[in-house]
Structure formats: C-alpha cells, structure tokens
Length: 318
Length: 103
Image (cartoon, rainbow over all chains, first blue to last red; front, side, top):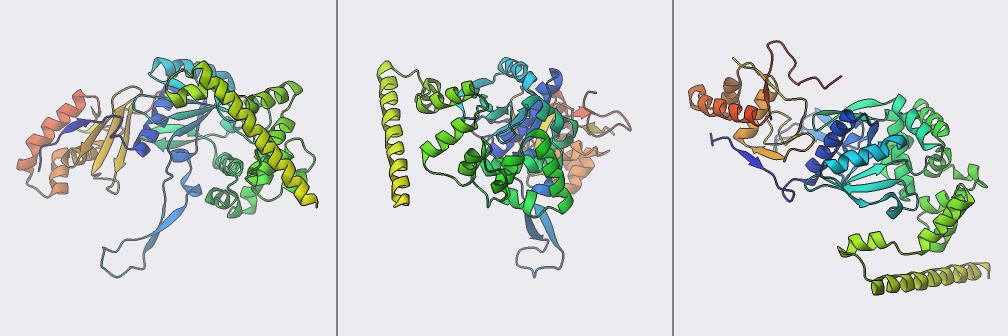
C-alpha cells in the first residue's frame, strides 16, 4: 500500500461539481451561524425523484447482462450554485459572505431584467446566484418565500444537511426555470409535470396560485392561452417560445412591469449599456470613449431590431 | 479500538466507489477551509473511518487485501494527521458516526 497522503487542492484543480457542492455547504453553514433563512435550489439540491434516471446492469464488462437492472438517478451538472433567500435576509447574507472572501461579481441590477439575483464569486469555490425572488413568481416575494420555507425539507449536499423546498416546490422552481429559458421540451418539465400524477400536478398548481406563479406555470405546461389579457401574458409567451425579436421581448417586459415607475426603469435599463457589466467583461473600468461607443452601438442595435420587427409585421400583413 | 466520525462542519464529496471505499475524497472545513483531496489509500482510510468502523486498520487491510501488520502503522499515523487537521474526529463510544448539527 502506498503511503497515505493529504493534498491541498487549488482553485484550478477542484472539480467544478465538487466546488458547487462545497459552495452550497459553505452557504448553509453561514446561514445557520447568522440566522439567515435560505433554500438551496436546482443543481445538487434537486430531489432524486425529479432527476433523470439511467438503467444500470450489475454485470461485469464482457459478461451477459443480468435480469437485475437498476434505475440510478443521474446527478445534475451545474456550473454554479443557486440559493433562494428570504428577501429581508439578503442584505445580511451578502454582508456575511463578503467577510468570508466572497465578492460581488454582478449586482441585482446588472443581471437579467427581472433583477432577481446577484452573482457572488470566491477564490476557490463555485460562483453562486443569490436569488431574492424567482422569475415567474409574481406575488409578494417575502410571502412567497415564507410559503416555500414553511414546507421545506432537508437534502444532504457534500454531507451537510441543507434546507431545500418541498418536492412540490422544487417541481415549480424547475418548471419556471425551464419555461423562462424557452426550454418547453426540457426533461425538468417532463419529470416535474408531464410524468407527475394528478395529485402532484394539483399540488404544484395550488402552490403556484399561492405564490402568484400560475401564469408562468401555465406557460410551461401548455395552458398560457387561459391568461390572455393579463399584463405579463406577452412576456411569458415571448420567453417560453424563445421569441427572437428583441423589441417584442423589450415591449413585453415593459408591459409586464407592475407599476409605471418600474416600467420606465425597465425601458431604460434595456436600452442603456451597463457600465458594471462592461467592467467585469473588460477586467477594468471602461474608458469614456468605450462607454460612448457602447451607447452608440446599443442605439444602432435598437434601431436595427426595431426596423426588422416593423418590417416583419408589414410582411406578415401582406 | 478507536472509533472516528466526520465533524459536523466538514463538507465531503466522495468520487467513484459505491460509495465506500471511495477512490477520491474531497474535503473542506466549513466555511473557509482550503479544500483537500485524498486519493487511493488515503481515501480508503478516510472512508473506513467516516463510517464509524470499530477497527479502522482491520477494515482497511480487508479493503486493500494486505496483512493487518503491514498496513496498521500507516493507517494509524494517517488517522492522527487527519484528526490534527480537523478532517475526522474521535467519536464517543456509542455516539453517532457524524457529529449532529447545531440545534
């Protein structure tokens, strides 16, 4: 037997999948120590009942297949960790994380138009998206979190007991996530909804109605037409069908905004380049010239997209 | 005989194996410790100790198919090192194999 040895692992040699699990475990510990309510979602937090399965035969290579074929859950591959945090605890969590070598890569306002998550990075752990709300959940974020938190369960991630939503809550999260990505054929929707029993679907529907996610759920499960006329109908139609015309999505986002103020903010942030995102991409602060060029490029892009959309509409009318 | 267990604040990911003995074990003292990796015999020793074996040296000897006298000194030396690094701890007799998390 070779002498047993202990080796350190650098950020470069830590496998990503291991880093993601360690990230979940580290956040669970920080949350416990600082009374932060946090739910681990997606990736290694997903219940085995919602994972794809692979048929495994225990026969050795070269041997004839045995009758004992096992169904083994296939672990999900993630490039980062995702957690949903009680909105009123988000600020405290970020402050604690910053004391533990985490830095903010993208702020809430730098991310998607939903401004739902901030991305934090660490010298050797995987990146994490801290969600203060989940896209598709349209109700009050604090109440929605409380509903999910009340029915939480525990999953072992890297040997640590981590708080995760109930299986019903996980079904809803996975469906909303795939729907937002326009991946209506995704196995997450198949396993969480198509293959679900009537009772399981009813539980997901009831939860969606409680947290204001019934429209997004309907978009992911082929029932969106029932919500025609709702302000967020066009947005979820565009997202779930991967609408390519950016102005259409832009207009849908503006229309779906809950207030006039939010609509104005959405309209502006989608047209104006984001200096912080440019800084992350460049690795330094953009110069005044680079910013000016970005404004011009964005304006030209907007004009081109708008022209293409109008042209396309006229063509369809003829 | 000394029994061991995984400290509550040690994250661990076992790679390969089914799941014990693992061929590779990644460990991290939470929330800030530098990650470590144990491979081959080191992973076998940690795996055996983490499952609360009463006699880790005998379990390792059986796993690797070598005489107990040959492996025991190495196993005991390495267990001491793991304990000093906080990656495994001595379990109370009759106690759980993993430290219960704080209430």
